[in-house]
Amino acid sequence: MSNTENFTSWRREQTLIFLDKSTTGTSPSWVRIKMSTLLEIAVNPVTEEYAFIGYKDDITLLDRYKISLSQENQAVEGDACFDYLWGLFYSLPSGSEVQTDCLIVFPKAGTTDGSFQAWKFRATLVLNTFNGVDKKITYDIQAAGDVERGTVTVADGTPTFVAATGD
Image 1 (cartoon, rainbow, N blue to C red):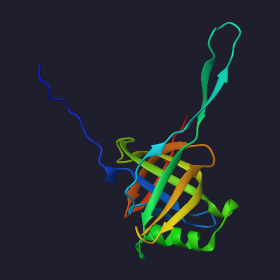
Image 2: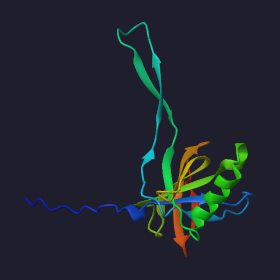
Image 3: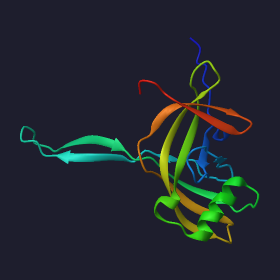
């Protein structure tokens, strides 16, 4: 029996994260996060404890997930994502001004049409720091609504999201 199996290792550049920099929401203008050294997607489970009378120990039930990503972006003028983030950082927006759509594209094939599995959700961008020494902006992307599952194709750097049916 052989120990050789057909595994495919995912590479960091295959997971794509996009933010919609449009202000109207009618036609997205996606910018890809490329100049970051962080790629950790936290699902942040929200649980509740119950002390049911029929059990000696409390029971933990999983209620939902609250997706978040801590990010940084290298300060490189001309990078579409940095230019978008710098505009936000400089103007110090709040409330709905820091809400946008986020699209996470995974390297897992969606169907035979060349698409990939993806999540799309409304997000709040929480701007944290500008570090002039390290030359980066740090920020958090926090889900501000339900995660919509679907697939994405990317043509000329522009993603097209198609929502899953029956999800």
